[in-house]
Length: 525
Image (cartoon, rainbow, N blue to C red; front, side, top):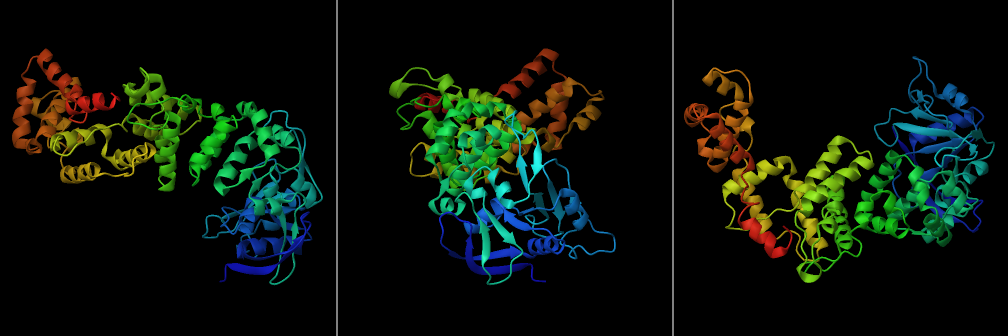
């Protein structure tokens, strides 16, 4: 079955700028069928919002939205199927209606995730926004023009009449000049920008995010209104701010977005910790301030299309430097900034209500981003301890952050020979035991050998055994470990405790001796 219908036509309609434009549209079969179904039942249908904006920009829509004069109850009735009806017979396989804003989701059973649910929203106008987040009341409107007037930005306030057929004059409804702003790459609020932001303060961030995603500029009046009303963002639920922030960080121009947030006074309500790096000079090994360095690291991570966690950890990796800075000029130091930075990152992740998995990963990456490796100076045992300390599942991301850190510092090469050699060494030792669960003797074995119940003594013995195996993997054999268990068990409690504490505290070669010298050399202990 042909799932799309292409429309090549002349665009006309109520565009204040006048003129016509030749365009080619590809409208999915599911959307076309929904529009035809609405029309057969005596209702209007318009393609609206981000999907139409993306089509006009020749981008692939992330979702599909239809506006209609049909009321929610009528939409549900039209698209709710009986057991005898086929999913494609009316354009949907049932509906979802879980909000008070007149939106009904029509299930299509499409394989395309952007089309599994097509949202149909009744034309509406909105009352006052006394909480700066939600309209006090929603009233259904009669015309698409009324509906477009309550939207946020002109580029989102354009509508295309549906259904359409090949080679006809497409009716574009554009009362606020959205097409012209798309052409000029401009983000402009609909009507009075101050009023738009007072209706929903999240639009303050959305303006920056859209400009970042699309590579557009924010129009002067809209930009000034953002600066004057930036504090309204405090009234917005942190979860909504988080979602906009994630979209911004995941855009190709994420670094530009962070800079724009600072310029417009928004960053202090999202991640004020980053602002501490503004104007904070570093030492002779850095040419940028802390803030500029962090943003440049993010820019590299975004250019490489790394994961969200790597991008955010790249942005936050040196967030602890301003608090740990001692001295000024070329010999200033930032001792333990990775530890302080990890704590600050945890505060940011908690403030923005990130889930535990994402938060823990970002914090861990910030905490361990600073590691030392030099060819010929770190042994295989040191590499094993490094992997054990940071976790094998974090190695790839830590190396990506090291790349971003280097490029953000202004060096020309992201992945020098020493990091390539580290990868070689990790490949060489990857099958060696680095965790108690990988030992040939487990906790149950120790209890059986010694005839004792579970208790802290088992953990202490395992810790000592693992330390010895990290030194020499050949020791990971029952022939060696079982007699060693008995030797350790025979020690006095204080002697075993001392060995266990030494095992816990023993620094691997990435953190002791050679690394201490390196940290002193580069003033980043």
